[in-house]
Image (cartoon, rainbow, N blue to C red; front, side, top):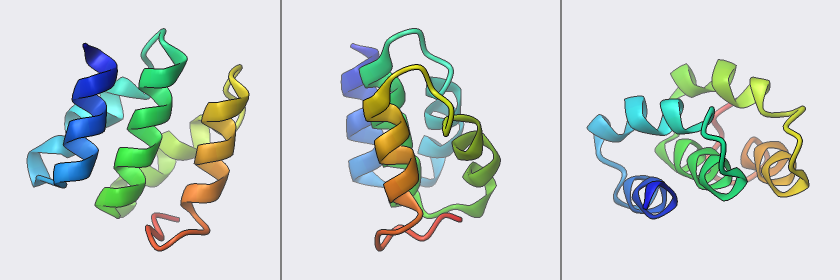
Length: 78
């Protein structure tokens, strides 16, 4: 459920999506964290950069990969 919500919020890009996506970076589910990273990258809000930096050392490789790539794609959060 949380994973799907993070995915939808990131795709719709509403301004109200920022707080829940930022909170989802700390979710115990790795796929939810991954979707939050992707969503924050899509939002392109520089306020998300500190939270994304914190995920660079995530225990899950897929989260780290998305986090590293989000600064290199069209999202330009960093």
